[in-house]
Length: 316
Image 1 (cartoon, rainbow, N blue to C red):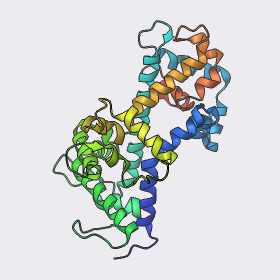
Image 2: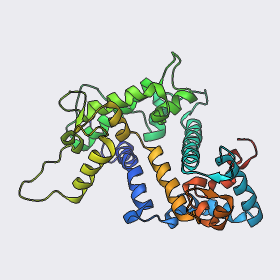
Image 3: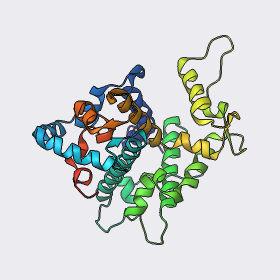
Image 4: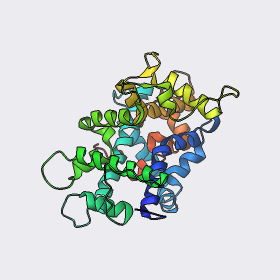
């Protein structure tokens, strides 16, 4: 069976790009350690439709909606935004938009409108046709075999997300399939899937060598830059107990997007840039003094929240 340059091959490229996308985006967002406000604008205000909608708001309406959002971020109502309050708000925003996106996808994938997404409907939406692979038969072509493995993993995740006996995934199950990191009953599956892929000696842990994959060091030359970066991530970001291997919980922090870390980093950035009196918290006056910066940050999802009543309406 040869797939050739078909939608399936395109699907492989898209899936691989999605897996690397979060890291690439973060590198662009903080290029060479410096925060890029222009990237913030491009991220969600870069589309012409979004830019036009943003411009339509009068300064007075921007100000009004922003103040409403600030009141919601200020959980203890003391008039100041702390790192913790900013981080919690940004994480909530991440989850809200992830759920909204999944709900929109659900409608697109549910081809017959019966309120459930079947495995066939998922394939048709992704690849324009239904694809079947034999779980026990590897393909000769390396690219096709890589796609087969990815497709089978998707199918296993789809089946795990399906908790009831009804055919297909309902909305809640579809969200679990698209965002397993947001659903408790998918956590063990995510960990086991990662162990199956990376734990080559089946000891229940992922060593540095397993983490680096197929890389083999040449004793006659220095490690390339990307290996040094990956080693640093393993040692300083993931291996919390410094035992030289990743246990299941440490593995989870690697394979699941760490929105908490990104939110904390953005919260710290905002305080560093906007805290005029060095008290490590932001007053309304300090934020309004730097309104453009705040509106091109993840705290307002790059200004998007000013157009979403979920955030600026009096009741959240």
